[in-house]
Amino acid sequence: MPHLHVALVTERPEASLIPLLQLRPQRVVLVAGRQQQQTAERLQILLQHELSSHTEFHRWDEMPERDPKHISEFATRLAQWLSQQQQDAPGLTVTYDLADSDKLTALLFQQAMRHCKADWLYVDTRAGALYRLGPGLNPSTLEAVAIESVLDVDTFLQANGRKRIKALSDNPAWRSAAERHKALTHYLGHQADKLAWLLSEFHERVHGSQGVLVTTDAREGLRLDPSARHQRLSRAPHFPCTDALSELNAAGLLEWSSADPQRVSFSSLTGALYLGGGWLTEFTWLCAQEVGLHQACCGAHILDLSGQHNGEPVVSDCLAAHHNQLLFIECLTTGPGPDACLEQGLKRLHAMLDHSAGLVSTRLLLACGEFDCARQHLTDLQRNQGLEVAVIECSELKLLPDYLRHWMETGRWPQP
Image 1 (cartoon, rainbow, N blue to C red):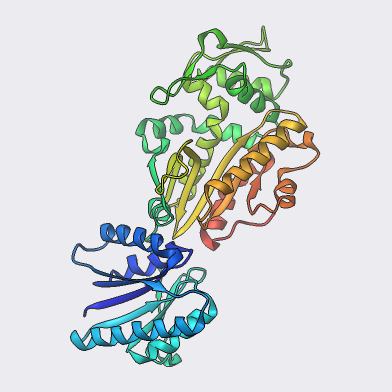
Image 2: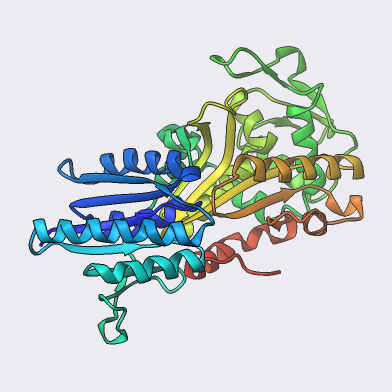
């Protein structure tokens, strides 16, 4: 039986995609106000790619905003048009999804839709169900269908005007290296609070002003500076940092000897990138694989499809999707000292929200460093700044798999 689906496009376009991609109607009507016309256009392009090539699309782009009388008149005209479609195509079923529209708009549309035989569709992502009510909204007609997993990272991004052009984790060689480092990476993650000073030192020796990495042109990217490959730690390491240095030396990721404990040498770009913070990204990816996350993209380059904010590429440490939920993860390793902690923490937290504006997601910051030195944990910092970002510090990194499982099951990040 042919099916026509009416979707009201709102500021959360991904919400409209769930029933469209699951029900796969033969005809789609996208309804949008003037401020959402570009969003509706993006959704149509996405749906034309995802649905059958025979799918028929219609656009109603002039829905009034904040004017109940005109909204009611618009909804009535739409309902009359739908009624005509049903007369022209006997057996055509019609559903309408109001997504997360405001209550007044929803009431006006529900009243107008009494003029045609249209079912109301309500998507409850928390309950994991699509609810359908028959014409007249009679409770006895209520049906529920389990929501399927239809959204991935790319559909989330495209619906919100962004595009992932590449990711480190797309490369089989990167994934193989992460698996090879698995035992060592878990060791660093589980001991991160005890190794905080050393991990911060590595970040400074690699990425600092006198660090071993230098930036070339965009095509070549980062490379090792041969004149800076020999570095000295700010102080002599003690246990357990000496054990970690021995493990890293044995793995070939750096050169270190207890005979000169402050001297470290970086012989490969791979080792420098890993010790400069790549280990934390790999730890995140490995935890995502362990718990069975549907998708995790690390080191993802993201473009703004409007072209307005592409002067400097946005690279996300990890974007993950599971059962139509998006998780936006950034990894931060800071050098020791109050100023560095506060400056880097604030900068990264603000940048995270700026780059993910419009993306309805759980936002997580994995923070590794000597934050106690700042006399203020990043959790306090983000709370004082009003930033809705969950923060996991060194001592909690080993709990990341448990936290991910909780998010997968509930859609909410566990409260500390």
